[in-house]
Amino acid sequence: MSAIALIDYGAGNLRSVHNALVAAGADNVAVTADPEAVAKADRIVLPGVGAFAACMNGLSAIPGLVEAMERRVRGEGAPFLGICVGMQLLADAGEEHGRHAGLGWIGGTVRAFAPAPGLRIPHMGWNDVVPAFAHPVIAAGEAYYLHSYHFADTVDVAATSSHGATFVAAVAKDNIVGVQYHPEKSQAYGLATLERFLAWRP
Image (cartoon, rainbow, N blue to C red; front, side, top):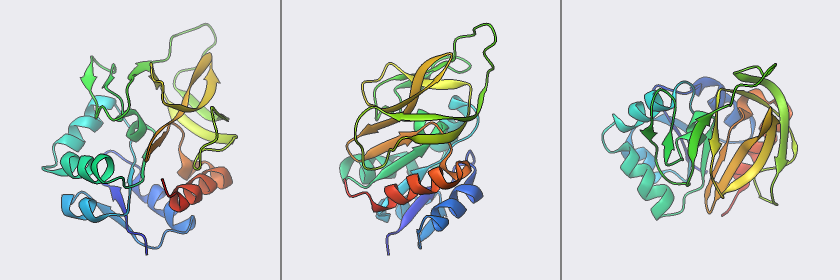
């Protein structure tokens, strides 16, 4: 069995993500904030909803958690999936309510959508996922989004979508992948994304 650590830091839609992972075939999902459990996990999933700074502060407030994630993911190569704000936290910094440092695992900055006539913010609902290259986890399709900020200034773009202008729908680097959309709300497409993540051997 592949042990999956679904990180609980008070800022994620944990029940829905847990249920979606199980529906996608995961048989050993631990909802946890325990650094020891994270350090032993075969795969790590970081969800996230809310403001960038609040999420980063919540993650950093748990002693040893970021360090365990760093060691297991960046040091030892465990497959990692970030969802929505969990993907945004991979960036160097976020600009919501001031500039705040992120994990810095993938270069870039999380910025607000630029206001434009007729453009609704937050970006909410179904929209395209257009792969930038062939990746084992990311595929073309339609997914459900809910966000006011987007991952900018990165070279590690795995997919794009469009809302007023093109924005990053997914990032990928080595054993790390992040999606701006919500797989747990994206029905068959989302389950297929999670199935591919569970099968991924980076």
